[in-house]
Image 1 (cartoon, rainbow, N blue to C red):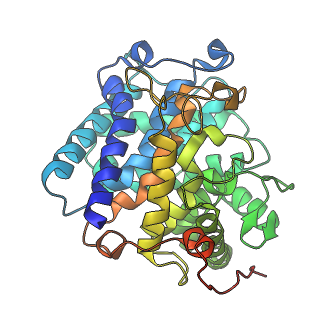
Image 2 (cartoon, helix red, strand yellow):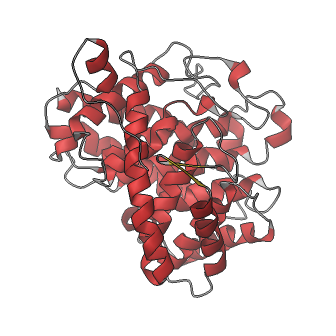
Amino acid sequence: MPSSARSLWYTLLDKVSRPVVESLSKGRLRIEMPVEGAHPDERKSVTHLEAFGRTLAGLAPWLSCPDLEGDEAMRRDEILALSRRALAVGVDPSSPDFLNFSEHHQPIVDAAFLAHGLLRGKRVLWDPLEPSVKGRVIAALKATRTRKPGYCNWLLFSAMVEAFLASTGEADWDRMRVDYALRSHQEWYKGDGVYGDGKMFAWDYYNSFVIQPMLLDILATVGDLENEWGTMRAAAEAHGRRYAQVLERFIAADGSYPPIGRSIAYRCGAFQHLAQAALRHALPAELPPAQVRCALTSAIRRTLEAPDTFDARGWLRIGLCGAQPSLGEAYIRTGSLYLCSTAFLPLGLPPSDPFWRLPDLPWTQVRLWRGEDLPADHGQH
């Protein structure tokens, strides 16, 4: 039933996120979070911002959701309070858990995930903050400007930071960083709903991990401020609808999906774009929301309910389906794994929304592989 699906989702999101926000809220994230990876010491200084920024990017819509009751409302309110305290601790220079925004290049990435979370949950995560905390957050985000992002999806990280700053009323937000990222991705569009990661196409999930979710939310935030950006927005929305179709078709009847490309240890975060399309009511007409709910539920369970996904203290371990440390590239650490939280974005829709309210529907691979006669898939030209 739809209600049981929602209970499963918020219970799992609580399980994923609580260790991160609770430890940081107490100034104990560096003490309590393990740092797993091939060379854990090399990126230890950046992985705590990874954990918090990515967690908040997935949590934010649920934290903003209206009309919750009972156990879900209680859990949400607890996580919201912990997240606010964690944010204040993370930007406090006197805290033992002051997060690293200013050393090495990786903070460009996770400052952007943090900004994305604040943008997605602006009403409950940003607006109530004390002015002093807001000032520290803005200073932390601006500290990433001292480094140059790579000529690839990283351009969107700088642009996301600037889009969030624009949303707060900061007068010195950098239009050029936004414009450069948007124009570059316009040039890198490869067709049939996908963008290159830079000039080259790559078989991976970075269109969903980063490119399309950030591109669409940047355009939704500042797209009306320049005529050219408005034109880009219409095209990006069309590309996004096609890519949502593709992602839904990737999910097999058992919840598995092609383990292709880098960063596969982000688990169900591979479906952030599909989850965001559902959250934004931007699914293509061919995808009923209840069908997407069932497909996402299957992928979430396949990747987060496998034995040994969490260690004995509840922290995520490197892997796709359980503990598989060899799937962690050199840049993967424990904090990196929390991008899986972005699969839960539709929890930002109230329980009365059709995504949650309508009866279960089988997704495309279930229907095709049981012999149902469906229309052929057609690419976008």
